[in-house]
Amino acid sequence: MAADGRLAGESGAGDVDAALRVAAEAGRIVLESGGETYRAEDIIMAIAGALGALSVESFATPTGLMASCEDDEGRSRAVIRRIRKGQMNLDKIARVNAVARDAVAGSCDLDEAERRLCEIDALPPYPKPVPALGSALITGFFCLLFGGAWNDALTAGLVGLAMGRLTSWLGAMRLPGFFINIAGGAFSAAIALGAGAAGLAASVDAVIIGSIMLLVPGVMIVNAIRDTIAGDLVAGVARGADAVISAAGISIGVGVALKLWALAGQAL
Image (cartoon, rainbow, N blue to C red; front, side, top):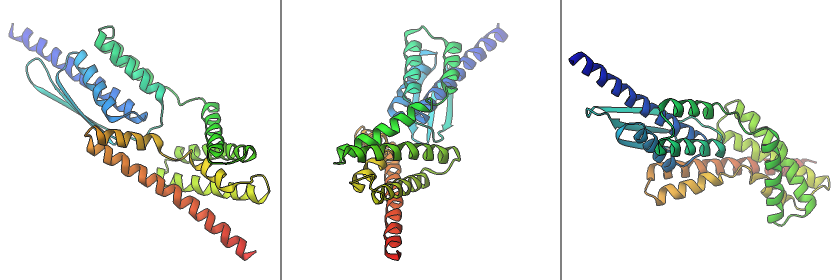
């Protein structure tokens, strides 16, 4: 009997360990896909609790997460996951949310949840035409918003299309985001100035502003404000600092391009 009891207890502990591990993977996917810290924490607690873990606690930041729970005998379990820089992917976040809802509803067991999360994690990025079209539309319409004409918007759309490819290529090289923003800002300003000199753009300022809006960390700023208001000060300050650094990179890139263009004009 004692041996059977120990085996049963070990099996239950294994289930709790697996439940916590699966829940932590769900939180990691959410954070690497651009999700909010509170969403990752809620999903971890929901999945782990639904799969049999007790007294689940979680703490997430933009760079890492921790989760803990207890088994039926009161023994504690904990996991830590380091969050690597990912890519904004709302589809992955929605799919992980669906897994959490199904687990809470009882229609998704441990094996099914793990299988679905593995499939979600392996999903490829959005097809290339989608980000390219989005980049062109975003930069073009922001150019119109900031007072540009239709020819300026067309120029900004082409700049955004090229800059999207440039930043994706630099990101694939694992270049830090700060330097990617510098390169993107300098590229957009240089092309806009060249288009203005060639007579393709009437308002160079509108083209530059519309183009760099593709680099502005809008979601990051919103999440930083939301986390700070909700009392998640560590996550809020971290996201806010990241947003400030990103904005500084964009400013440096544009400023360098403008200064070099002015110096080249003086030299000629």
